[in-house]
Length: 155
Image: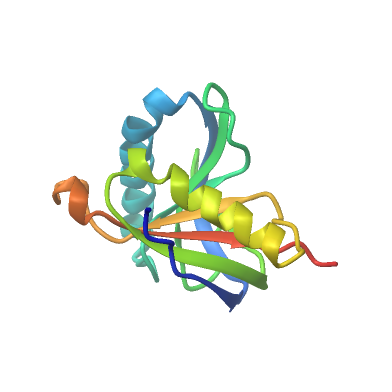
């Protein structure tokens, strides 16, 4: 039997971000993420600022042929953005999260466990799933560390 993930609740503080929001197919996502991070880092360098935490992708849906995603970085304060790079915001609120180690292609069972957590705890997800990426894809896939965060809908 597979090991269950350790799912915890936390209160997320409001977090300004810089993002590129787009619709894409899942097959194109890895290249799009790399290009988007490059554009955002170039903008941060241009304005002399740094990201305040690890990069993330916010999934507004799970339609693998038309994924609605925000690709970005948390930043210290709101910035105006430039071109495709727009200011964003991760809202304050109660969330659940789980740390996952391994290939991205094998994360689906963790999402299933998180869905089960919502059912067991009689609450609903808010609808946006965030994945925070803690290491570079140059690491071996078995060592990739991802934090999956799902907001809990206010009752």
